[in-house]
Length: 236
Image 1: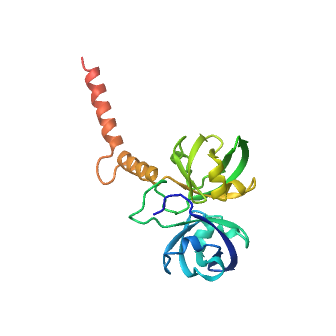
Image 2 (image 1 turned 45 degrees about the horizontal axis):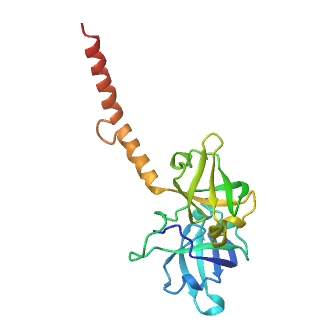
Image 3 (image 1 turned 120 degrees about the horizontal axis):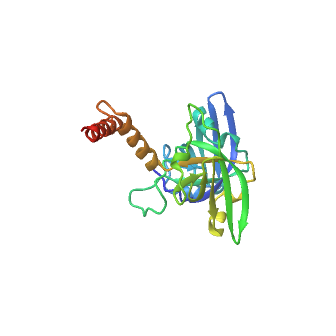
């Protein structure tokens, strides 16, 4: 579990692709390696990845992770190049203060930056989600104004949502722009999106109740009640 509060910006120093996936080495990452062990989880641009090797002393510290093809398909990490900066956050400890929102670092999909507009010292960004498919339904039901969204691992507040155009926006204050990579990305860049998992659970529970899960569904019960009311009303 993560909070969506970025701890540090690391720099990709090595990329190796093969048919099974991709290995990334992330340097200048000593601040997140102080209590690191092989097998620990670190969110890289919002994707929970397993540390396979690390050295916290050498050249500012580095660690290596492996990206399976599923991760490459779901995220923008396969497009990252040597020299790119990435957002880093260690998995949340049970004894720390919780300051963001519940983030699994399981990226749902990517979105595209389509607008960037300064607003004083702040920056307004607009994103467009991909067209939904049968295997990847629309995420718009989970996005609401003033709700949470995780973008490249950063917990951010939605300023607007436009269902018709599959767009949504956030605002970055000056401090946030300095602490994460998002404000530096160019128009047309892809970003990793994770919607609020609480919304996912609520939606699934409601749908299960409406459609029924082994017994009478809520829909069936409502229809029955309506029929009974209408029947009584039409009785002489």
